[in-house]
Length: 278
Image 1 (tube, rainbow, N blue to C red):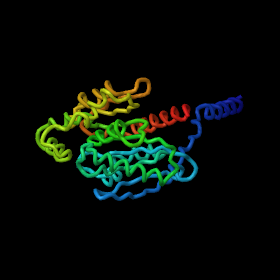
Image 2 (cartoon, one colour; image 1 turned 45 degrees about the horizontal axis):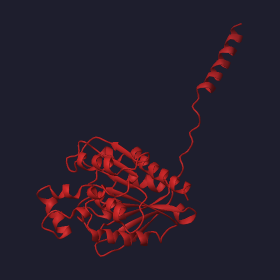
Image 3 (tube, rainbow, N blue to C red; image 1 turned 180 degrees about the vertical axis):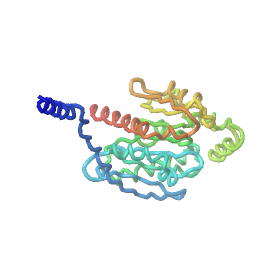
Image 4 (cartoon, rainbow, N blue to C red; image 1 turned 30 degrees about the vertical axis):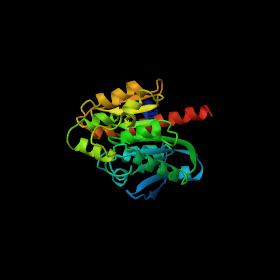
């Protein structure tokens, strides 16, 4: 009897171990190999990241990233913080152009837009381009990203903004370095013309697919007067997303891998919509 009990206990233990055993983990898809191209211009180099899938067998979209005030394409492309966005985008089969934007403090000036147009053309000759370009503006880079969508010389299918300026006249209204930089960039001694301000242009331009990330704790770029206000004016309903985060300007949580993947998913959704209407 004791032997039978031990046998039943052993069989029960084995059965239980099969019942509670965790399923085998499914390995994540390997990250694609990414080739980096350097694109030189008089104001400095820009850098294009191309996943091997885009060079080999897929038609891919281009994401053009415009940098924050006082930075360069080289700085942003090598930033450990922004690496989460670069990885999420390239893993999702987007080519990523880190644009030099015409210098350290262009503030969306028309000459920077002309430089960006040249870079976009040169970039799309280096991989299997599917015809779709997205703009991604970080801080000051939001102005150029929006200008490229509103008045650019190539079609922009959607815009991502991270702690970004959208109100050029609002930036000029801040006394001190901001105002001096804006006046120097635009060659003016007063406020820039309203027809160069993305926030003003949003009143008459077509609605845009927008993914806007911002924080009410941001003391550098007021979220209420930029991201929130722009979303109310310019966001295409049904597809656009507004993501509120916490913490200071360009704080650590604003570069979380999960948030970066949400951006990549948003752009993939736009890609699928465009493909469905072709």
